[in-house]
Image (cartoon, rainbow, N blue to C red; front, side, top):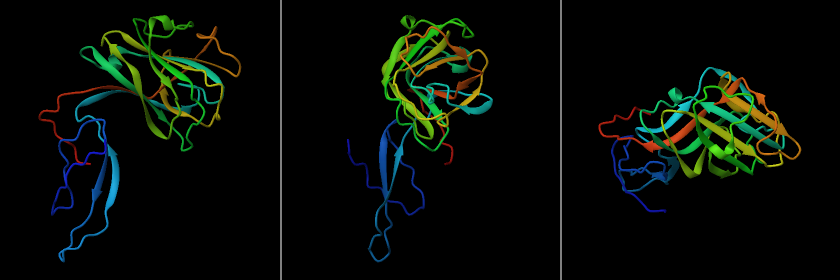
Length: 239
């Protein structure tokens, strides 16, 4: 909202900003005050705050070669994928509200054409993905829009929150009907995971769900956004 906090004065070469809100963008401006009463020009940096405690469940494992197959296939026009996250990987002691999902994109060249995508989440007691798709009517549509990514972690905030029960396994379905592709060199960071991911791709019209699919031996590195925890007494590690 462009509101201003401060100014703050310090004689040290560092300053700890307190009272900031999580998941908020800030622009920090700094200048030096000289002994003769003059000032240097302002310098600035843009930052985004995260949770001090909690805020994310990260899913990763033994690193594998980057893949263009999932969550969307960057070498085909229309694609479909399902990935399974086990309850022990979510490591939640109680039900929680999932607010976002992040994927880790591997290359410096940004994606540009995956503009018509949907993300669904659902519960299951299955511990592996079978040769058939888990039905979308048992899942919840949580996101509609672009799935284009830049290098590093890319967060997609849900349009509708998802209440995860903390007990069953979690299914992530990505439906890509963008009818466009970049290149097979546009890849995501993944980890080895047998039986936990399936995909389908076509350059033609895609039925939802597709009539067939292939098993993947890898799964995306993912983060699920959760509400921040109680930060009382928490200690901030040095940057």
